[in-house]
Image (cartoon, rainbow over all chains, first blue to last red; front, top):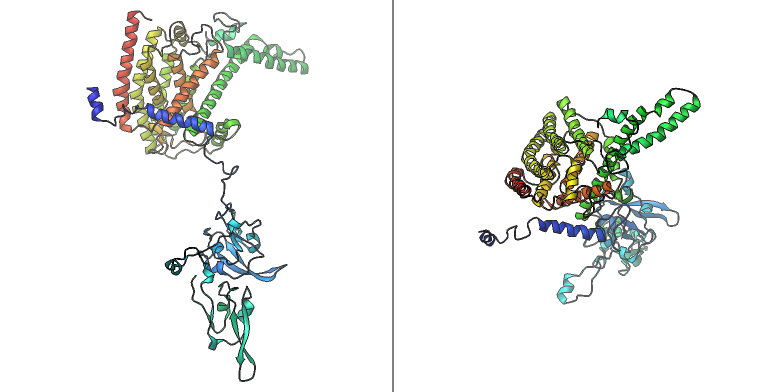
Length: 246
Length: 384
């Protein structure tokens, strides 16, 4: 009778040790954790191991930054703002200021920074008492001991390259497009050359006007250009244009 | 021996009946302590005012015996209290390890966590629901806590470590043990809260279904030992075998029913925190809640102590006729049984409401009756 019952229900608890099996399971776990200690990490006293490129708050290498403003434009939450500051060594410069209350630690600013001045940092303990404390000015944003892993490089495989079968030539985004000059509109004002953060623009004499004064047009050094669009923004006559890929 | 006997005899620590040097160790401790403390106080008073009448009174027989009794009660309670704190610590640590996490953190090995929790609950505000029945609200919980502490004080730790040696023994303990679920029903009603009322009802249902198998097991133990007195039951087990050998079914039934009576997981339906907010304790806050928690552990201690006395030979060491440190041996057995309870708590999920009555009446009661039959057969057959 009893055997028939057991045959009818092969998954019967009586065949699986009834309550003894869970007892055994918990006892095994008890012995195991008593020997090797629990996996829990006591946070304020112990900290988890953090990889080199951990995406904590953004950091800034103050001297490297060229103030191009790509980070401010690429930021998905618009938490980065370029501010004018008066530095003791560098004079009047533009540097990013980050509102960490809005920052979502995506690391795009570090990816898109052409000179690797904006980095990701392993700093994740960002609690503050007020919202104002969360706005990090450029000096507070500085990060010493920047390692190579923190400089996030963004490299893309172009579809045109992949179609050609070239798989080992990733290219950075700022190598893709350059500002172009529309010659008739230029008034030779020289502002683009002044504002260029990497001195890629040189004014070249292309001719003379009726009064005999030289007409200068900007000539862009493609190897230096970082695609920051500062010249396009500053141009009073919209003489420079770009195919925006950002 | 009554209180007046204690107070009036001159040399109350002398050995008269028991095989030990002292009749009652806590009383001897209290007596000796008051001889030192009272002696120092009397000496200091005598220095300030020589020849006064207070100093001889303080070191006289009456005051010494009274203060000896007082300190005896304090010492006895302090030992139980420390044992309970240790048991809570064991429970939290074991559960933590079973769940692969760190448990208590404060103090050496986390031992002082319970004191920290007690201090925290002590600092909380006293809140009472506006429409609660005030008398029922306070009196019911007082009786729940008080009865738990009372039965914990009624358990002797050894033949020389007890508060009173009384003939009714286990019967009285089981009687007071059963008061608490009824008072839980009263408390659930008095709080004017549906969750606590459901919790109280469940406590009553559980009490009805689990009290009977437990008392049947208790009856079979008493039948086998032929006495209700705890000392005599343990002495019988020392002379013969431990009752766990002939009554293994009774032991299992008793442990399950005692877990249910102490309202511990998996039988904690009256305070099922997943279904009823905190069960019958929902409206109790602050130190009231803390004391309810402590009284739960007192009841758990009593259940384990009864198991150790009735089945594991109390303070006896196996295959030895003499007693070596009987208090320590007894407490070790209690802690062992408590560890099994904690282990079961870490293993099982809570039993469903519709299952408690089935398990109580259809499983435990027949097993208890079978156990009683075995005992009766053994008794008739002349084995014991």
